[in-house]
Amino acid sequence: MTDDIDQLLIAALMEDSRRSLKALAGISGLSSPSVAERLRRLEERGVLKGYTVEIDPKCFGYQLQAIVRIRPLPGQLQHVERQILAIPEFTECDKVTGDDCFIARLHVRSMEQLDTLLDRLNNYAETNTAIVKKTPVKRRLPPMG
Image (cartoon, rainbow, N blue to C red; front, side, top):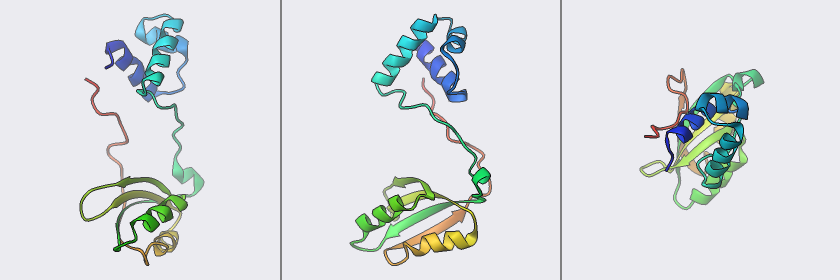
């Protein structure tokens, strides 16, 4: 479990993962060495899995984002999963229960590119695609308490 100070540190890092130990110490009321030790323990326990950079795919020409539901044809599950892994424009993918086996997020530069990439799956799976218009809730942590 995490205590209130751990949760405060995690929340501060979620806002800005580049915060210095000194800044985190100021936020938490701890010394910098104490903050470093807490972060080390959170990393060892697997609570903190990494520190990341968030980019805007549009800055790299990816104008469209799509959510793709993928239902492999019989006997094609493993092949479809390998195809998804091999296409770098798939930026996220979950294997799920229900009629569809995969729900994936795809970033593309154009509708033509979307068609080309999905064509790579057509012999092995049925797909259902929705274009993302807006993301009212960005990726966030569930409540920690």
